Length: 149
Image: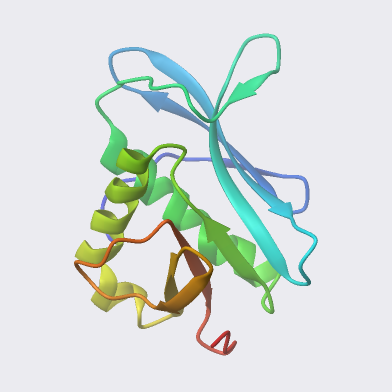
């Protein structure tokens, strides 16, 4: 992805990335990687951060910069995997429409993504290699050096 992205701060041993979404307003955001109960599996969340330090992954900020935000999230993958190369990232949208947005973004960049990452689509309890135009409830990313299938 060679599109513009936001500068971000790397925090908490590359498990948190903070940036400002600048559009109609300025919205502080964080990208969080959280270890799950499954070995080497991390859950990814994109959240709005409020003045009191609380966060929200369901809020719709409608700031007019969704593509730049998605590219920013993707930019953090390489830093995360540099620190956690044997890991897998799992994520889904907080709503079906956001999951669809993520599927469209992955489909659009799939040729570039596949050069570095394995991409899997989750459908219910089943995961399989990502294919365009398939509906998924979530996604898995790993470095090409890791086989999750």
